[in-house]
Length: 347
Image (cartoon, rainbow, N blue to C red; front, top):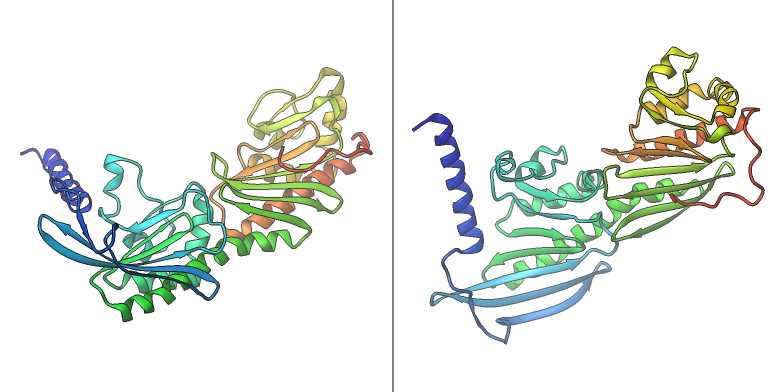
């Protein structure tokens, strides 16, 4: 057999074997013993401020009975949109042959043992690499139980009916749930301490308010750019717009001219050139527009878009966007701010 075909055949066999194991191909749906849903015993409790449900149930497959135990803990706060993780069922690196690979969070142990999916990869990385979250997951993965997280639900499941083990796992599940909520929110709360109001929900995070007298909006969520920072400025001259690229208005600074695409109304060209050459503008302008493709100056806003973020990078994004807005506003050719204000948020 050709070497390439042999590799494909082996990989296909591995995947089909896993599918057969996971979905029990060719087997009837389980019959249930115990209550209507097979429950033998269940209990709900609150552990360290976390809602926890314990359950023991029985299933019968093809005449063979099996008993299962599980703990469900509800994360006491939002998690990144689309978060799902569980034990790795296909060897890391093979899943991309048949579809998108799992998210890699840059932790060797967790990347090897977990299949991870999230609509906001940066948030999942900083949350799961948190020392408390990573430690809790590593301990649980060292045992025989299934470990899954889907949204705000943490589930630990094992075969058998061991109430002592189940009670111990209730503590562990509650601990993991609490760590997940804190690890996700902590960097965002730190960012809000400068004077922004934080709103967290199932769609992501939004911060809004004033910094150094400027209206600022920050969005963290799903999309091509996970983070968007908007800082309002005074009205830029001549409908000035700028972004990474080339073409448009010729700039006397060769670095800016090769890095940026600038458009402006003909009667605003002189003012635009004066603005882009003003003291303090060049550095933050290049960092925002050239350093973060997709960012732009438009109308009366600095819009910085970015992805693949570390937690401490969030603060730098806000700082440099505000720095650029202040430098633009300080230029003598910029129109004074509208006394009615420009509103807030990411618009």
